[in-house]
Image (cartoon, rainbow, N blue to C red; front, top):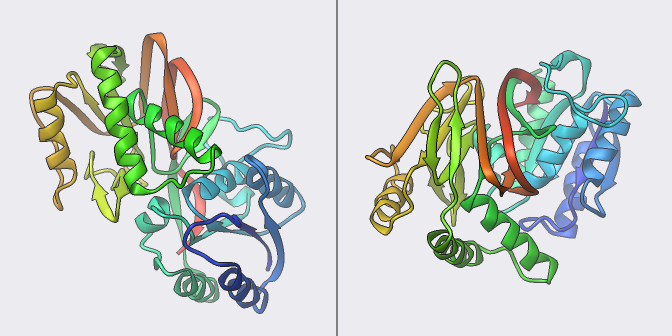
Length: 315
């Protein structure tokens, strides 16, 4: 089988020696090419080129950002752009994931081993036994996302952490927590206002925060699951979690619920919908947008679409 291993050399939970061991293990069973990413978008570009060249499997070794780029490369058309129409999962290569980041939300949702060496062995065994599953994806702003998206507060946090990383700071859980607090205080001073549109329902105005999930958990914080829509899964459609207030009491109660082991947030200011095919969020002023923890800039109108069975994944 022809395969491409996409390696993020900056992945937080792997070392150069460890990555070399994993590469040799995969190369012993596959006709393997290796791409070490050097810049943002490199993984997507390299994956798309490999798919056009006939590669049958792409293995992503890195965090959720690397996985997101590889997925977008797998589903890119011949000009390198993506389309929201439901793709044919058999018309492109399969995906395998070896977790190498800090959160690894997508890999955990697939119940992959968290240790990269164990995950590599798991992938090789799954290939030998022809184990694979169809995974549904989300699509927004001409990009695919695998586990979550958001506008407003969380996207502002992602943007701020990205700026800190560009200045050489580590994207640690502590930095995320402090950045989230700072952005929350900024939101209290200048509260945003969004309108959420769902199929067959009246528009919901006055929304201050909106998360869209493609699976559960929404993310992880220092190893603890953050659950906004516990019934979300790769095959069930999108989950919407929104707040109509950012008041301290509301936020304190919601944080307790989404960080509990059986997180099932609810309340007077909480809006939740599960298994919806489409979510549209609009705003009078531009708000930050993030997909899979990647800041895409500011938008005033974004449509989030559920695309079932979009991708074949080795499990």
